[in-house]
Image 1 (cartoon, rainbow, N blue to C red):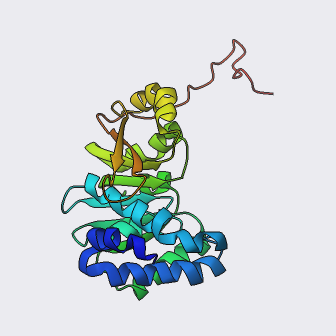
Image 2: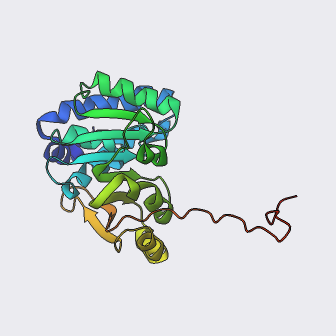
Length: 237
C-alpha cells in the first residue's frame, strides 16, 4: 500500500485492515493470473479499487443485506463485506472463472458466514427457481456494469419497495442521470440522485448514483397474435 494512503485505509477498514491487505494481495496475484485485474492496475489497487469501493459503505445502513450485481473480482461487494462486518453480502456473477475466484477468496479470507456467491445473471437471481427462492436485499450495488437504464432493469427487481440501488459511476454520472431518469422511473424507481462518497478521506471522492425502488412494475406480457378470418394467426406461414 502506498504510504500516503495508509491513513485513509485505516479510517475505512479499522481493525480489518489486514484482511483488506490480504484481499489486495489476492487481486494482485490470482486476480491478475486469472485475468480479473489488469497487470497495470496492481500499483493502483488501493487507490482505484479498494478505497474507492470502501467509501460507498457510508451510503449503506447498519445491518443491511447487500446484493452486488456483476461482482467480477468482488468490487465493491467483497470490499464492503471486509469494511462492514455487520453486512450480509451476496455476490452475483454469471461467469464461471470469476465465481470460482470469488468462492476461493471468500473462503481464504474467512468470510463464509456473511458472504455467499451466486453464479448467474441478476434476472435469474431475482426470478428464483424450483429449487431456490428469489434473491432480494435492502441494497443492491454495482460498479462499471452497464448504463443506468439497463442497470435499473436488472437491479430494481432485487429490491423491495424502499430498497436502494447504489451504483458506482464515473465522470459521466450526471449525464447518465439526465439521459436515463425517465426510463428508471418507468421501471419503478424514483428520480436518480448523485452523491459523492469519501469526501475528506479520498481524493477524488467516489461518485455514486442512487435509485430508490418506489413501486413494483410487472413486466408486460406479449400480446397474442390476432387470428385472421380464416382462423390462422397473422404472421403464420
